[in-house]
Image 1 (cartoon, rainbow, N blue to C red):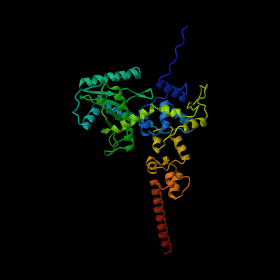
Image 2: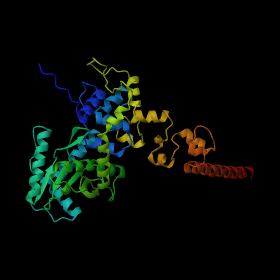
Image 3: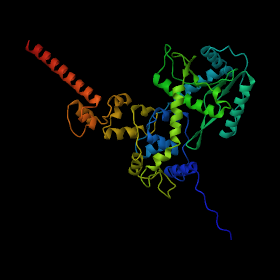
Image 4: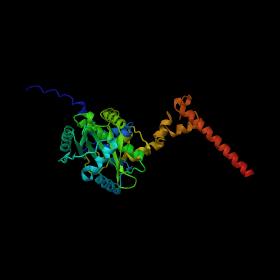
Length: 397
């Protein structure tokens, strides 16, 4: 009998998938990501917790509910209906209004004839194949082509993520432009900066997916077209948005996701985010304390912005508040405070105390944030003293 063949170790990608499956739960299918999730991940690149949970395909909404901190953000049914009605108006007439806005805002000659290929298919892989062929034919044709809801795919931590932008336009020169249709209004020529930023990050994800799908990535433009209602009407208006910065940030963050094994390797033995104990196929019964300990073993980077973008935001906020972390005051304040990471340390610095709450830089007087806080506290005391004296003089008079 011939000796058994030596078994070769699985490639790193296979090992990573196995490790992430163990963290998620052997019988739990991965929770699918979408462009919104990837955009939110890119907006907070320092959050190791979200990077690991998203990379492992953990259902963060179910995890938050099991820990007693469910997320409450999301669009209302009215907002969904309004968004669908507005997109239908933009798509009317084979996308004539969409192309008019694109040509007007990007300085193109008006489109005369436009091809609108059928991209429907039996599944995401088939639809991706149809989208790839449609892009290739559109680039070769030398005319205008409009792709409504094409299916794209992006590899994230070794797993495919299916993405569906609102529209993609291929121009006669072969240039490929992403079109994002949003229902938030543009009032007097300006829109909510936070919503525009979120739309730009989402469009950047589509740009990356198109670069991976298109035969010539250089044809994908990094200026996308954002279409929104004008003022408080249902009439569309459009603005070009440069997403080069968002594309670079998202590319770096996705590259970091392929190294989530480094985060997973640092977890305590036996850590799992599986909601069901081993052998239990029923409803989630794992104690909330065990899940909180597992989540707490991965460092988070909470900021108030997370409340509108992450299912674990309420849990992370409570955790940060309990620790007295200055992150709860916002990223801007956190950046200004330098090495002072807790509210206790900030108060100690402002009051001139020299105790364990201050870091080494604060005790040595080397932290400029400490000096700024002490100057601010002194000015506040002077102002309160002056106002108190003035009030006393009025009462005496």
